[in-house]
Amino acid sequence: MEAGFSLVEGLPGARLHSVHMIGAATQADNRAHEAALSLEMNLLKWGWPVGESIGALPEVQKALGLGRQTCRQAIAILEARGVLESRRGPGGGLFVRAPTIEDVVGAMLMYLALTGAEQDCVTEFRTLIWRLVVAAAIQRRVFVRPANAQPGKWGFAFDLAEQLGNGSMSMAAQLAEMMAQICQQPAAPARDAQIDAALLSHDVQAAWNRVDVLTQPIDLNPPKFELEMAEQGFSLCGRKSAMALAVRLAREFRDGRGAVEAEWETAERLGYTDAVVRQARRILQDFDIVRCRRGRKGAEWAPPTNAEGVIRLLAPCLAANGQSARDNNEVAGFLASSAPVLAARRVARHGSDSIRVFLPPAPADTVDVMQGENTLLELSGNPLLVIMVRSLGLANVFVDGPPPAWPIEAKIVGCNRQLMKAIKAGDPDLAAEVAWAKWRIIQESAEPIETSPEARINASTSLAIRGLPTRKTAA
Image (tube, rainbow, N blue to C red; front, side, top):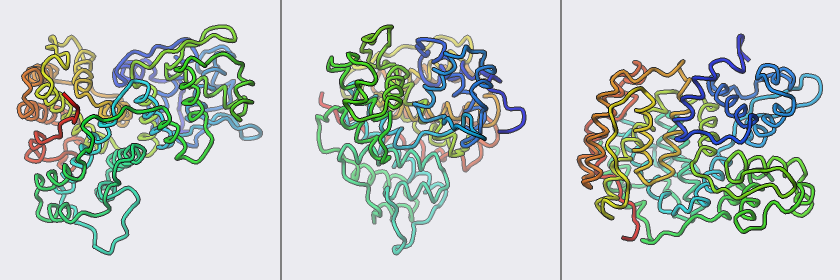
């Protein structure tokens, strides 16, 4: 660990920003969950240093100012989430780990199933990522790979993102493909002649038109996600994990069959160790899926109200892989600018009663602006877009030091007012123009690394955002 590392340094500011990046205040049941979240935020501050030691349990307990039992509970939660590892013996202690992308996919599917989401959000998210990748490739004049080049496992969009060198874009493309695979959607093509031609001729609209054809959904009445799909997602990592068991227990809780046996009984019945069962139950509590009470049967079913648990897995994944603020902002900016367009298209299709639109008040501080941004994301109607943008934002909080305050809050809120009006009117073209104008304002006010030409798609490309896909749901 770097010299001067402190488990508690900067925690108040980290907690403030984390609450608004994840979209809602954390409903922690006890100090152990508060401590677990605070420790996660501090690890983000230090770039999520995988493999580094944060000390032995007594040292961590003293640094966090916790009692022994509370500290052990906090560490157990973090071990269950796969972000800490306890090693015994000489040279042992607590070491930083990072969640796997398979864990993120499984957690996403668990959240989507528990909230009753429809599978067409995967198609929509995948389309947005493909559009982002091909537009960025055209803007940066990335040439098509030779015909004899070996294609990758995740299709042309992932390969293009790898050529661009944007790790956040690559991860988003891989997530989209893994989700599509589990939803039994057609695999992304390794190559496509029309996409290649559009790249060579630098024709963004032609590339996007082809993307729309390739991702065209088949079913106008998409099915909902099932918890079995989440188990399949966790199984991709090839290990018998506490996360996978948590999904199985969530299904039992949902069906009224949970919290009727001791941990050892669950372990014996399902073939897990007592430790894994204990971790799985803590995951359910940490993801706000159940609320635990005292006693053998002390738990109640509580489906999650927001995606905090998933965001707190994806953000460390991004940070641990060393994604830069510039890379994160390129992906987040495109997706965030897409959100009001999708919302306006929903209104155009289903009417203004399909969403709740409000005009934001004059800002009192940065928190008010962040709440407005959260609202616009939610209005998109796509939970995957929301999760991705907030995870990128959370990963960026401490990438280059403390996050700067938004210097032109009045302008941002002015844009948001225009966006709300465009959404209410069901005007996706106007929403697109205002959304990108706002993103340009934000970029121009940021640090130089975030305003370089390579950090964003040019204006002419981005204004074509008005062609974003419509959610294919029945009226």
